[in-house]
Length: 195
Image 1 (cartoon, one colour):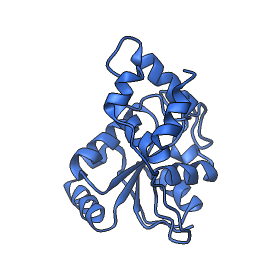
Image 2 (cartoon, helix red, strand yellow):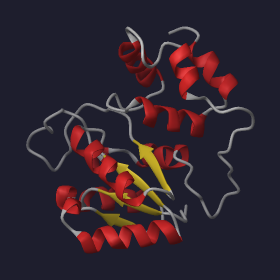
Image 3 (cartoon, helix red, strand yellow):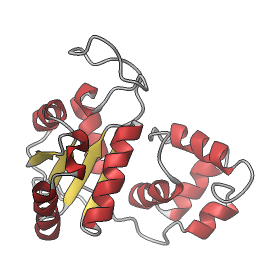
Image 4 (tube, one colour):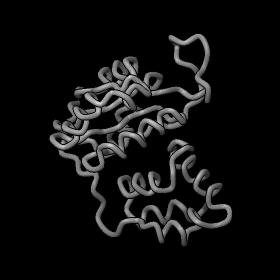
């Protein structure tokens, strides 16, 4: 399956995992190296403007920090793919990560493909539109549903993230973006009924 957008990952093993799952151009940030590599950041900006990018980082704090930096530097033409929190240790490592979560390199191909599909990746060999008809979920909806700005909202969001198989570190704004990619408003309201 060929993807039109360029996929941004943290390291070389993440790149190998993505390239084994899909046919795509993949650029690695070299972890926190992206913070000081102005040339690579300029390249990523140009690619984002021309083809669009999909950021696929680990679900740990480092991955979210890199994701936030890229979003701040690139602005538009950026999509975010999220892998679920899976606890364990990659085969090549002698010990688990600090947060005991598998990174992109430890994900199975179908999980990587699903994450890219859920982010709205453009698969060139398929006619797929991830656009949902109808209204979008708004910040006001999130507040009224008790998912932001109120007592217990963080716990409720965490429970919903777990139910949707999304990373627990996802911010309310990132969660809202993903919800609007994956679900229509009516479908989302049904999902939160029993929280």
